[in-house]
View 1: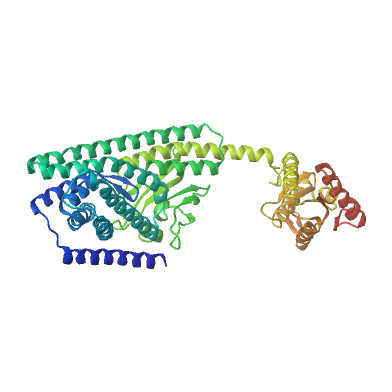
View 2: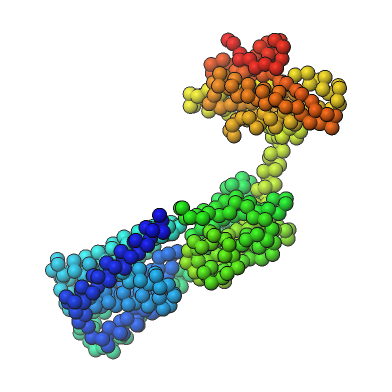
Length: 554
């Protein structure tokens, strides 16, 4: 559907632009001095090539020439110049035929409509005076709004990603340049009417130096952003951020220093399989990023196995990764390995819908950021592992008693805020001492691990399973009443009972008994919730024959 909408939009834009231009030529003619027109066109093309790219938006001082041409030759002459200039830049210089046709259609509509509106409200061609300023401003505003309106929807139907983040910046900068371009255009038109052609041409020349200065300033700003990005990455290395925050920061920093349409981070496991852990920018309804890559599989597997950056300027021409369907949505890609102590721990992939976007400087800055990011990721993973060990029971891999106490208090405070219940199930393995005495403690450990596994497999993702002590387990169930928790406890009891636990000493059948209580219905504090669930376990379950679930009765 997205491709169909894009096709319809493109055909409509090009058709309307072409019809309007042909109709304008037929009705009004072009009425220009070709010698002057070609000089103006040459300057417009030069200014276009000195423009600044903001992802999918290009800013330049060429509208100065367009406004000047409008004041000298009128609506059709200005539209002819702007269409010719943008199509030359896009088709001849940038080799984008489709984009050239789209830009031609957009400029034709914007400059013809703006010119006709100018004439409709009383503006005059060939007259440069203060009385005409308000009409000239209307011409500039209308053409500016139409250009940006059409461009916005052209990018939207194409599904271009992240251009919105640059939209405000580019629009504000373009508006700022009009503060310079409008008076300069008036001055140039005045010089054309009052002075010689040679003096007029010489007056146009400073625009080239101004455009070059703007480009230099933009390059300095970009260089400063890149230095700040590296600084942010260095700061991140020394932080104690969680892995998810680290990954978010990496994507954010990359987006600040290079043009990005989509990006993905893959991390390898102990078997060398690369798993997708973070991504942005998949186009809706199209082939998404692959979740996992084996060694040497696809562009990700190749990057990891070779331990080298893969940079492709034109994915339409490079045939190495034709089987990667998602790459058909993009024009350029850089995949850089994440390394730590010489070993590859993953990779970062950056993509853009346009070709030839990532130059050598872009690849270098990506590699610098990736080197810093690798250290931050490794530190985050180590910090996570240390933190996890401090709150995890080493045998059963459930949470330990210390974490359980903190989690229970947190859930009770949240229950007070939301007026929702929180339930607690206390489980105890039946006759566990007999298992230890009969089969030994190693087998007993195997039994505990399997029971913990079955409990975890039968609760929700946000429920908290902890080893309370010995053969006793606790389960915190947020937002559930005791009656609802009872159903889950019964499911767990049946799961434990349903099949034997396989051990080196043979199959062993075990049963568990459970007690359930909830807050605030059956307990008014964390201590009483534990006490009441434990009392239900022993008074309502153990005392009545074991292998039972009981709810605490007030």
